[in-house]
Image 1 (cartoon, rainbow, N blue to C red):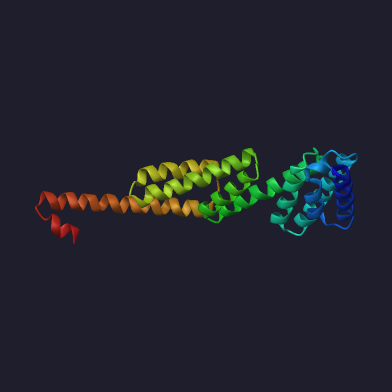
Image 2: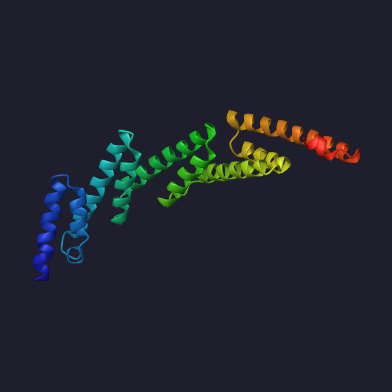
Length: 205
C-alpha cells in the first residue's frame, strides 16, 4: 500500500507544481513515504527552483516578506540550489539597507528590531553586524542620557558615530547631550553654592 501512496503523492505534487501551487507541492513531497520514491530528488529540485523564481518575482515587486518566505521554503528542501544563494544575497543587502535607513532616520529601536528579524532568517553579514552594534549602542546612549550619565552617553554616541558616520540625527542628539550636560553641571554648581550658604531649599526651588 505504501508504494501506491508514494506514487500518488508524487503525481499530485507534480500536478501542483505544474499549476503553480507550490505550497501544496511542498506539503506532498514532505510526506515521508514520498521522499524515497524514484524521481523525488528531481521533483524537489524543480520545486526549489520554482520557489526561488517566485521569490525573485516578489522581490522585483518590492515584497521582501514574500520573497523571504519563498527563499526559506526553497532552502528547507536542501537541494543546494545556487539561485537560492543569489536571492539570499539580494535580500540580505536589502535588509541591511533597511537597517541603515532606520538608523539614518534616528530610529535605533526599529533598526534593532529589523536586524533581529534578519538574524531570525539566519542572515550572517559583516555589514549587518556593524549596524546591529550601532543600533544597540545608540539605545544604550539613550539609557545613559535618561539617567543623567551624560559623560557615558557621549562616549557611547561617539562609538556609534564611528560605526555609522554622517548620521545627522545622531549629531543633533550629541549636541543635545552636550547642552544637557552643561545645564546639569550649572545646576550642580548652583546647588553646591546654595548648600554652602545654607540655602539648599531655595536653590532647588
